[in-house]
Image (cartoon, rainbow, N blue to C red):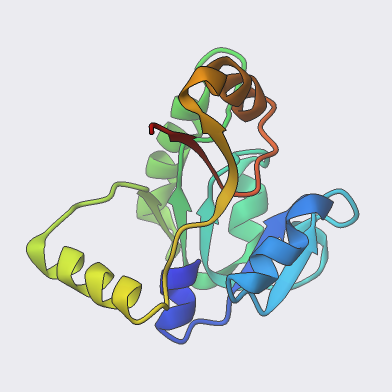
Length: 160
């Protein structure tokens, strides 16, 4: 999100109630609280959707994309038998017949990209979002917290 904002993108973020302020602080111009509203019901269409949670079927994402939009598929959940692989396979099967693009989220660290990221960090346009910090002795508590899947940033273990 921070990178998209730094490049001038209008960003809409989707999160639960507890994350609304965090997304706004990261530069989201619009925030949808999924506990109160479904992003796919608001009539908006998006050029790019980063699917990180995988809670909707492919058809919902397609309906929310612009005609030439791109769905970037992250890890997320999926069907009962094949998990997220089923949704990914369906996306690639549909892909030749539609203008919309479906791409897996794969980061590729090149020198050029790392230098650009370094510049964004040094100028303060991109930075870490730390939700909680635990001492090394608190690792079990940190793991339990992360397993709840409602963190509002990274959970950090400090080693002193």
